[in-house]
Length: 226
Ligand code: B12
Ligand code: SF4
Ligand code: SF4
Image (tube, rainbow, N blue to C red; front, side, top):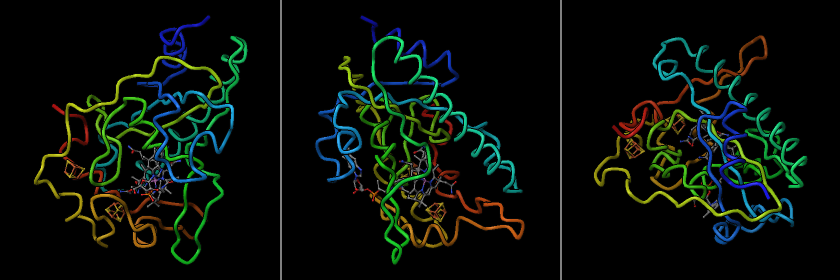
């Protein structure tokens, strides 16, 4: 039987920067329809992995480098998930990849509110990869919030990684809430309608450009907890 250490070494060899394992019981309070077992009833564990953006791209005045590298990282994580599924199958572990961004099914058009098939931020927290900041983003202790998240559901139980509880947002910090130009954040969730309108721009040539990431940029833990 393959060990969790061997699985993690496969994921890092595939190009992820960090990975962790969450047991399915940790998703008990996920909203109905968005538990990994709602996606695939055989799921027993969720393998979650991170890949980091180059730290400096978010500081470039032109939004294209950030947009470009973000899209590349989405593709890289999706490819890692796909390759991981093939390698796990050879080890007799069945696996189902979760899209890093889209597609997903849930869409409330009036509120422009979408939900991924599972919330990858919560999955990463459950896999011991960091905390959720008041800007709602995952903050990894070493890599900060400049990480994107990928996941694969598997039908095998492994020892889960301990969840992180040794750091949190400083009690009085509200930098992300205050900086948001459209006041989309309340410290728990984000108004997607407000954020989407301000943070995505469709170029006349059809490209999607990210035009805001202020709540990510301003965070003192952006590049990790020093
Ligand atoms: C839809 C979406 C958006 C929406 C909503 C973002 C959000 N915070 O949920 C909008 C358009 C606003 C958005 C913006 C951005 N996004 Co986005 N987005 C997604 C996507 C595709 C789905 C997220 C989702 O389902 N949200 C809806 C639900 C889950 O959120 P909610 O309503 O607040 O959930 C509540 C409850 O339902 C409950 N809940 C839901 N699921 C679960 C599960 C458990 C176990 C529990 C206990 C509770 C629980 O908890 C919440 C609080 O009450 C994810 C990919 C994914 N599959 O997760 C990327 C993702 C969240 N986005 C990401 C990024 C990077 C961004 C941007 C920075 C992009 C940019 N502009 O540069 C901004 C950040 C804005 C912000 N502060 O959130 C990354 C975050 C990486 C990180 N470090 O955390 C993700 C994870 C993509 C990825 N694969 O890496 N995004
Ligand atoms: S990305 Fe911009 S608009 Fe969206 S929540 Fe963050 S600061 Fe607000
Ligand atoms: S800016 Fe402050 S409150 Fe917001 S996520 Fe970062 S540490 Fe937490």
